[in-house]
Length: 407
Image 1: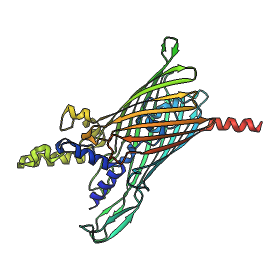
Image 2: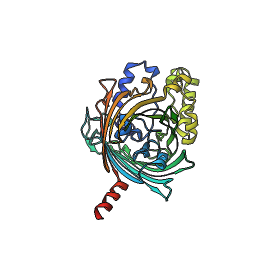
Image 3: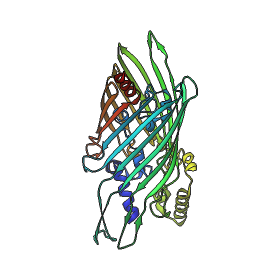
Image 4: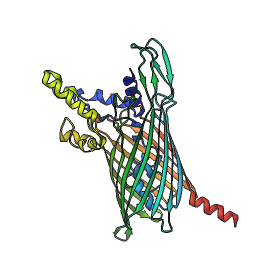
């Protein structure tokens, strides 16, 4: 019972109803998403990146770079900043699930070539009512599952154009549940993980205009497995490889336009399926499946990272389908008004969470407000009409403002 509960809550957290809709749209044999634990770590927290189709590996550095590519902090324009983001999740079907995120950074040294950063994200799944017993009709229990992650990062310029960063993270996923009739239980799961990232930026001249070209990478959530049933079963963290590039060019005085592309791939091995072993028609097929399943269950996270590039049952074609694509752009006027547009594509066989995004932002002195809106390609998707809000504060600007008023 507990494993079914865990699966249901995990699907709900990441928009699993959209995934189930994708399964209905393709052949069952072709539907094979990559399964992980703590799925909420993959949800975009801030409005700027989500407004460009979930883009951020190489975008201009900002206070929310911790999620996208923390090595960008070494190139941040302000010495310090903090931001808070809020996302009502699955608002079409429930009203008590949300993601809140608090992020900040501080640049070190007189040369400002290194930075410390931190973030805290909290995902509440609201109030969930579960049934007791084998049939689920013997009784009712209400639980309040949640997940949170706290991390610290360090980034440094290794040259005038290139920086790298590292992040250490603690994760807690509390989906605790106890069946008073069967004695079946779920427990809170915890894990530790790390991120490694890099960022390169240069300023080529095109005609008489100075442009900006950047590329970046981020390998996130490299860490331990999580277990919700006292170690009987383990799930991989959503270890992810993000590669991105961005090009920014001036349109006219005070006007700039940037366009970017991100590629994402989960570095998690694909779970074996009985259907891939001739549906277990012979004893040999069943034995081969059990051996493959045991290897998957006992596989270390590091081994799984390398295995994830070549283990899809559909071969190279399916490996390519595991890559999701984000592309979008941002128009900025005088770094005070921003308009954004983007698109995120995920293959139907891997979940089918594809959508258009729109966003806008306004900056006034030390305060900046950003908002984004998601429009899913499938009208039945619960991710449709998702809103995000981010409020940012330039702490260096605030300090200067206070100093001027004192004088």
